[in-house]
Amino acid sequence: MDSMSALTMTALNKSYGAVRALRDLSLEVRAGEIVGFVGSNGAGKSTAMRITLGVVAADSGEVRWDGRLIDLDVRRRIGYMPEERGLYPRMRVGEQLTYLARLHGLDTAQATTSMEHWTEVLGIAERRGDEVLKLSLGNQQRVQLAAALVHSPEILVLDEPFSGLDPVAVDVMSAVLRDQAAAGVPVLFSSHQLELVESLCDRVGIINSGSIVAFGDIETLRRTDTRRWVVDGPPYASWLPSVPTASLISTEGSRTVVEVQDASLTTVDQELLGAALAAGPVHEFTRQRPSLTELYRHVVRTPSEAVLDAQEVSA
Image (tube, rainbow, N blue to C red; front, side, top):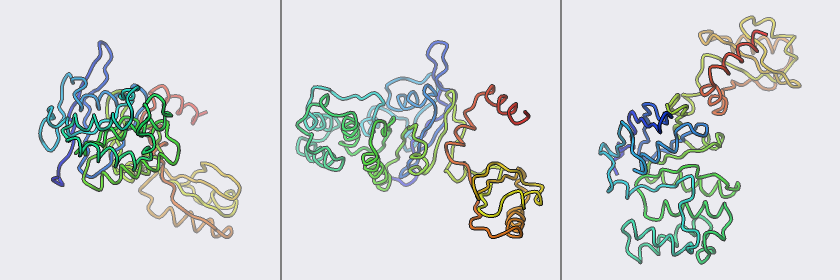
């Protein structure tokens, strides 16, 4: 697989009657990287994925893999996991996965070997003879992932793959996605579990009302003009007033969080540390960057929410 290969969505638009589901959405997933797709319910994540798979058609825009418009041949090489489980509930797990692998072109022996491999990896080997409807929701989710992987896809598009999984299953699935990316497969998945997205993904796309409002690697997204530091040391009242450019955000016990709005003040960290040390011993002094959860809340808040925030600050 070419190291420059990428799954690209360009200027996708989709409306359902008066509802605008996608608005010029563009997103790229390079070969060998994991991209998290986050947004509220109804933001457009599933619509973008369904367009990629050809389940629905875009009103305008295009999806390409390795520079080529995605057609039926390319779609056969995509591993897709829908948010709504697309399994046959009364079909046995092993038979179903073998059947799906054969639909993607594997012969019986290859399909059986692949089914055995993925059910073993995902911890459901002992469930091969069970009907899907008799499985727990977590095990159904594992079978759904196995169905996306059983034909050795070149691309993975997974809609809420971690939904309903216990922590052990989350670790297993995370390891599988990392292994797939390490093998050169581009992995795009949506999730509401932002801490998991932050720890697992190379890049993250935040979607709001059908548009990408932020996209990049976590460190890039976390860069802001606002700087915060955690100071574990003497009471803030004994040193913070001597640094007029800093303001108090929170305090708990000996730990204080302070903020400086002007990023051009490159020496303010030294001023803060010096002021705190002058007042007493400092046990911790660290830069605090916003988490993905904080970034998400900031970029998807509505204009009315922004007005309320401003009113709270001025109150």
